[in-house]
Amino acid sequence: MSIITRSPFLFRINTGSCNGCDVELATTAMIPRYDVERLGCRYTGSPKHADILLVTGPITARSKSYLVEVLDELPNPFVVVAVGTCPTSCGIFRDSYAIEGPLDKYVQVDVNVPGCPPRPQAIIDGVAKALEIWKQKIRNQK
Amino acid sequence: MSANIINFLIFPGGVFAVLFALILVSLERILVARLQGRIGPVFYQNIIDIVKLFNKETLIPKDAKDFVFKFAPLFGFSGMLVLIYFLPIPGVYSGVKGDYDLIILIYFLALPAISYIIGGGASSSPYAAISVSRELKLMLAYESAFIIIAITIALYVGDGKGVFSLKKIVDYQLQHGAFLFDWKMWPAFVAFLIVLLAALEKPPFEIAHHNDADIMDGYLIEYSGAPLALFEITSALKLLVLSIVFQIFFWPSTLSGDLFINFLWFILKTIILLGFIGITHATFASYRADQGFKFLLKVPLVLAIISLILVLLSIKGLI
Ligand code: SF4
Image (tube, rainbow over all chains, first blue to last red):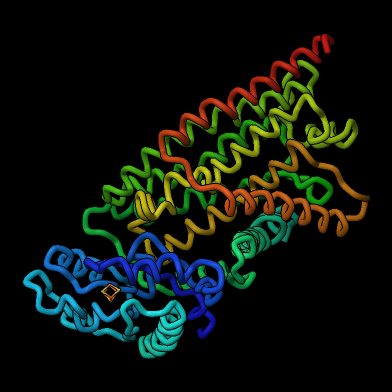
């Protein structure tokens, strides 16, 4: 059973981030030097394929409904990783009228990767931690 | 068990084909990763992916046509399994000897695309709808070039009369030299490589799915769990089938009479073709949808027709 935890599919959603975290996540974590595919990861284009959901951004009023929809569409078991300070605490956007975060209002967050933006190494470390939690979840489900 | 059942279920069809095809896809991922300076996944990554997907929950969208949605992947999957049982592997496996298997090959090769179209159409997602229409156009565009290449080869082998038996095509090349080294067939060979990339939807033709910035995952967007796993196996098998077709059409040469050495040679040839696919994958970006169709309608078709004309001239004895 443990072998299947070496094949996590990642889905990332941007809930109004400033793109700092997105750049770190989408490009830096996949380009030379920082390689998440080494852990067996693959970015997918649909939440229905995903095992690990990576959320960036402070959840704006506009993007809230999409986030809730994506959370509904994830097949069990899944792990949620909050990338950056924004989804953890809304960061510098905290007191804005247009912010409906943080992320743990909507779903239980399994891993927080702090930083504004976090370093790519930290993101990969976060994904590796998420894999451990995913393994636990698969065990508990059985 | 009779030999036919073994051929269908274990080698070269069935178990062997599925495992080998999945390893091929993983090898391609490793090659792309190495060309980009990364380390990449392990060589059995896609097998793990499939095992995982079979263990996942299967979600069915509320508006989907339930039955069609669930069983669409089986079309392409069974079509590819039958095709691998059917095709001869030069020097290794003689295939099912028929006089018209080239035509059957053309029909069956369209099955995966048709199963994508049915599955995507039944899944009631706007992204899937767009991707299905693109898949349909893509299929029309490359299929016509593929058919002309096949006819060219049939005419060449039969010296003016069409020979539609794959066995005879292989035997002809074993006697007269592979078409890969025949200058009259070079345009058709280039056209075949382009058609191959388009049929596998590798860049520069990654138009209809795995095109995350444009239409997300296309027709696969609503799939999860076991049906998705079947789709992944189908596309891996399609890679294997097309590499066998490549070897039948252009490079059926064998090294010796020994089955095992021929088998290793077959694997080596497949990996050489895979290297080409990996290099284009790592080098090119994808076309925009309309540019892709225009390119496919012009270039491979014209190249295939050039080869057809050259072959017709040589049959008439003019060159
Ligand atoms: S955490 Fe910082 S870098 Fe990341 S989205 Fe928020 S403001 Fe931008």
